[in-house]
Length: 108
Image (cartoon, rainbow, N blue to C red; front, side, top):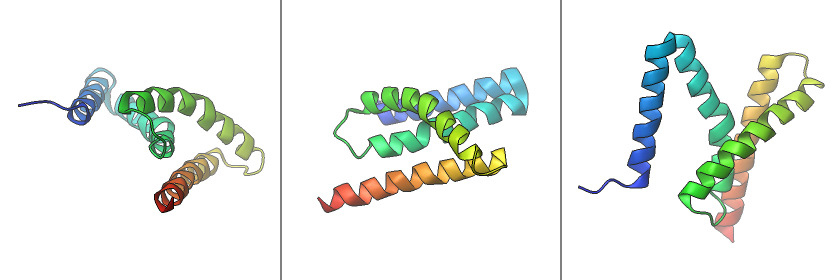
């Protein structure tokens, strides 16, 4: 049986979530899951539209997400007074950008 990168990545993510739950309880699980959901996933969806390898998309999406997401939240928080609403709006905005780019590049 051959293990591909997708199965290995899913197994690694599940192990990280399990370990964070064992060490820090529900708070640790929510923190790691939130970091994956908010910082990593939208940028990964955006980068999946370009011709990059899987490991390059993972690497770049992690560091771009760490830089871009808090910056967008900070700027949008100047317009929207609630931090929770701003985080939700930023997440939805990045997901919509990813879907728009996917639709745009599929037509080409």
